[in-house]
Image (cartoon, rainbow, N blue to C red):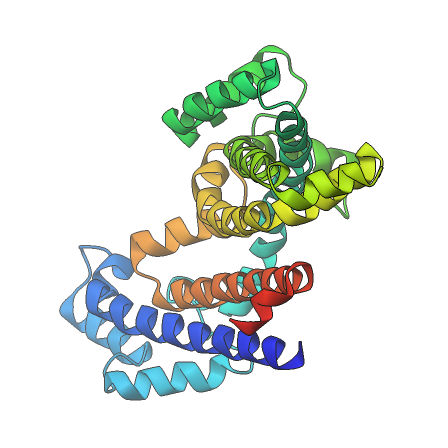
Length: 313
């Protein structure tokens, strides 16, 4: 298990280095000279040249990369080209907002998706199984922003159960914080619930057909214990989907944060992309990849614990 853990950790570090390095060079290649976006179209050539020098863009690209990489190792992602404030500080203010929504959506999807998946897996021909199939078709056909708008119009504007926009920090008011993230979390979680439920249902149906399940029932084990054995063997696919959905929800948070006016990393990514603020984009990429690596690392550990054969891969 130790060698398995070390291999997964090293592969995560390699992924982090490759993605951040590729993002650095591709961002500079795609954006080119960002001074026009930062100063506007009315800036003079002298003003652009001065800002170009201040941002260090007059140096060779490899020198710029090494300067950024060496500082990033210590958590210093430089300063924003827009307001010249530390990138790390700006991201630190935004991460709790996004994580509040994404983690809540993930937990909601895990709990509801597992409950629906187990229920439909035990009764694959029941009414709930047919509802699940219909929901999967409808939710994947509808755009995420449309679902968010429907939730706002229904539960915020018409019923007034939740606020339509805005975010309240947890330290300020736990109840107001929960109310402010409920609709965004539900909007993100709906599709994830269906995917997890579908994977778990399919896993249940497949595992229930295996010989060891019939043997367990023949030995007189209770239905609850048999279900737990089936769940353990059917859960790897659902866990993988849950991990992938967490990563996807980080990306989907951009649309949700714009609709619900949440000051998270999604809205920061949008504003940085519009003006070509490369330090912000690089910092956000590094933080996002760290989350991806951690989630995949934890997933590998859980899968390795559930199925020892995974450790040999």
